[in-house]
Amino acid sequence: MNVHEGMLVATGLRFGLVVSRFNALVTEQLLLGAADTLRRHGAEEKDLTVYRCAGTFELPALLQRVAATGKHDAVLALGAVIRGGTPHFDYVAGEAVKGVAQVALSAECAVSMGILTCDTMEQALERAGMKGGNKGAEAALAAIEQASVFRALRPGKRK
Image (cartoon, rainbow, N blue to C red; front, side):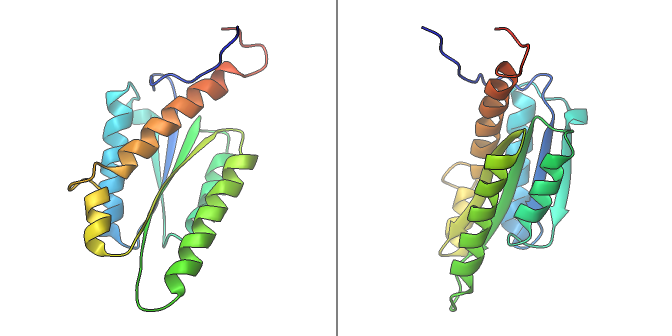
């Protein structure tokens, strides 16, 4: 039986981290968690590149362009949308997640989503490392695994 699966070894892989500046109190913690996880799994500092955009709605457009450069084995989307008193949350969160999914289906590299969609700032901070782990770190683990299985599937690559 032939089984193809990713490994959690980031050595030799290059990562683009696309981060929203809006809700920076949360997104900077996601970035720190993702970068720390990538380094702990073997990525070198020179293989991590951060790209910033204004908000989470703008994230998929930048993510798509970063993925299209061909410079990265994986790109990560890191953002936070926090519910307010209007339907704005639903539009931004839905379109951002949909946009990341579209990039993931068309990109030649691995794409990982670390976008929080929370009801409160407290929930977002918990998911960015305070209590509930760090979803940026989780997105980094998914990116490593996906990038390694993509690498194994490249034409001419034998495992």
